[in-house]
Length: 250
Image 1 (cartoon, rainbow, N blue to C red):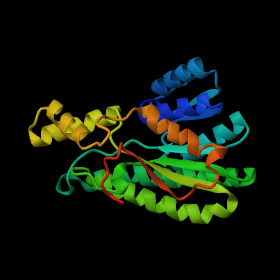
Image 2 (cartoon, rainbow, N blue to C red; image 1 turned 45 degrees about the vertical axis):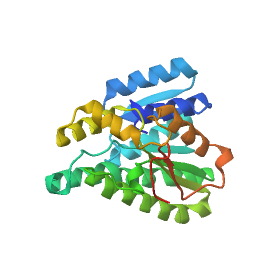
Image 3 (cartoon, rainbow, N blue to C red; image 1 turned 90 degrees about the vertical axis):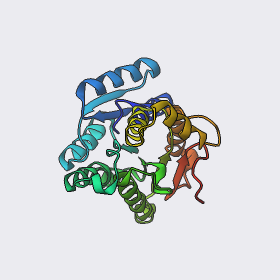
């Protein structure tokens, strides 16, 4: 998983706390090594760090191979790719569409291609992908995320039926407003677009959350740890919102 910061780091820490041995990745080697050191110190777990960009098939395969070689197998994959830039359709170039497709859709395709043979050999596994609440309710000024995250959900639902006979479970986690650097970036983009102070933008977005607050990364990570556990052995093909009740969709 991409785990040098934010939701990915929180998920890695939660899994390590449950006793999982991990291989975590990021495109930034310094940051991912620092993240691995922090998780090892806190949990005592085995955590290996690898610089990798899983939107590249060769690097995705190298990540899976490293997990199998280092840890002796592969039971759980948490796919976490950073969100594409904010903007409306008219502002997005074809190059930005292509990059977002590679980052958010093809990265999942490639990591699944690499991981599934190992999981089949092991008799099963869990694949979890972190998307966005936009898979159920599109978010203004996020056309790239709205389009591609919905595609990730469609892929995961399809894979849940294809991989179910091999006892490989796949689910989507759909975060709403969780306190991460990504949310700070989106709030700043919204403030710039609207001409409003960023604190006003933040107050307005929190006002739409029934729980009246922004979420914590560990609150999402707890769900990831549950779905990766034996307690979730009959849950697959689901998209679970972690948004404090903000979505109004069924």
